[in-house]
Image (cartoon, rainbow, N blue to C red):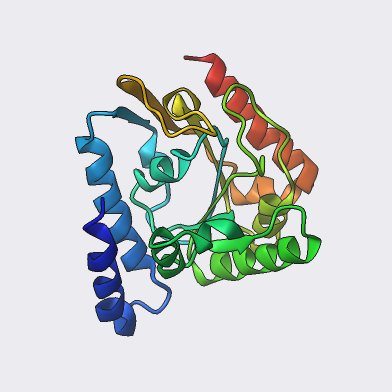
Length: 224
């Protein structure tokens, strides 16, 4: 994927005058990454339910978080979504430059002020019509699922946009947290689940929305 870095930066400079929000650019990068994901012999991606993703407008994709492969997995969907990511990822040499060009929304885990700023940034993006991807567990859970934090659901309610639960399965087996070793080929499942529509978002509490999204992902994991 190394050729992506210089090409992406040039494309961003050229596209900026007509793509102020960067939606077209993020779709371009996601398409490139998707091509890599299809061609690499390490992984076999299976995408289910992609037709459930709206063609335009703001929405929040909420996904479980198994591995560092999860970012690659959500980009396989080829959406213009911004991703909520750990602040330290923006400091990685070369990759951090690409993440910043993609307008990754930074958050510092455990920092309340950073969390509030991230929610405001998510809300602003959603109101402008740009979707956002959030991993509401806030950490990696390769073998189980953690509790969902409230930020993504607060922003969705404020902006009045649908929530789309997303199941990522097999990522934790393919690339275990804390290691760079991949043994053999791994089958990876990306399942877009039934959306939680605007009416339900508006009528539910933040806690109810978090539980509903998590329950749908847990149920989908059980139907392997």
